[in-house]
Image 1 (tube, rainbow, N blue to C red):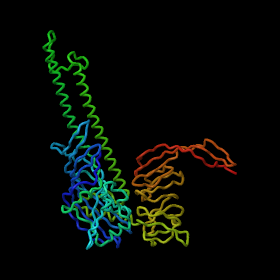
Image 2 (image 1 turned 180 degrees about the vertical axis):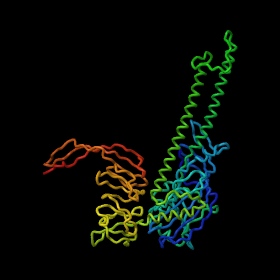
Image 3 (image 1 turned 180 degrees about the horizontal axis):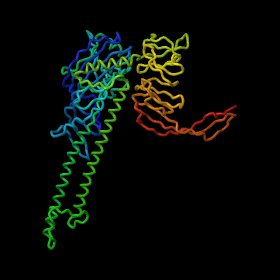
Image 4 (image 1 turned 90 degrees about the vertical axis):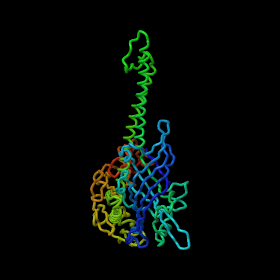
Length: 527
């Protein structure tokens, strides 16, 4: 079961972490960095499942800098759930859940924070005028377990300037979701705000209330708590059923012993359902109650296993998606060492994204291609027969140096990956789609040129947010040839299997069959 939390709450504590003294990657834009230690106490929104309040401790680091003129954001955090007050409905009755003594520690630790996004406040203070504020959306990535001191699994991300900073007026409009494009500063406004020498990342503390704007979105899985309470209720119900059954047997035995000519029953004898001469209805009720209790227990166990499996799958998918977007694996540093972890993440991002923003262009004086920076200046002089924009630190080119095959170059223009494929696509999620020249099927290679997903698709598109659309031609059969005005046309049916896959090649959705009617020229068509 998942509960979604909107931007509500109160801050109990925060600790300022001074900005690090680094040389910014872009001389026109400063580097922002701060560390926060928060206790959030907020209300869960009312929904069909539950409502109430949650108290959670969050330790977080947030960094913002620029690389080749493009913004880069890095956020990581650990979290600890302190208490909950949930109200929810089960089997038609309203229940309240509070953290209780006697609850196994494993149940409490099994609460999952599936994802979380926070709004980091920035302020521009100018003499003679009121401070101006903006908020930086901060996605902490795939979190670790409740109480785990390690920072969440994340890599630096590069949002567009137009989706970088939330404005105070638009952000606080309760009629719009926070991620609505209208809530953001324009690219020009965001650049001006960050380049101002008066702008800084603001401290969050007791002296200022940011309760309506710190939490953008959180998604918890409370199934372990509700499932545990279900088990407590089930145990109580089983006890009540057993007590009622024992009382009915005691009364039957007592009545039977007083009837003339009726031999007394041995205390505790259980009449067979449907054959109870005293009260067959009681026996039937007892059987139904026992069956219901057993069925409820099976349903709870099945639901618990299903929720746990789905949550684990969601977390693993997020980890794979995040890993594919950067050059670093899961950094297991604790929050005490999070500054060093952030430095390593930044270095890895700079290494694998050094070509961020490079755009292919064709020389106006000839047929060759090169690359330009975002400001329009030439970064790599034209020398390639073909070129596509940089993606994940690599540019896809065709060059005499590689013969007829596709190659990938780094930001310096050096060839770093030679392939044996004539047709290829830019990298996304750490993989590139390529076509086998013999079978004409598509597969995916990694940054080392190794085939990661075998050649099996008729169509294979680049990954977007860790998902790629693929298709395979199953059948293409001409059903009729018709000549119209001396032109021969074939009419037939094409059958495709299509769906979406993850970077591991596993199906996320599909494959499903799609049948298309087609019309094409006959192979021997002539006028």
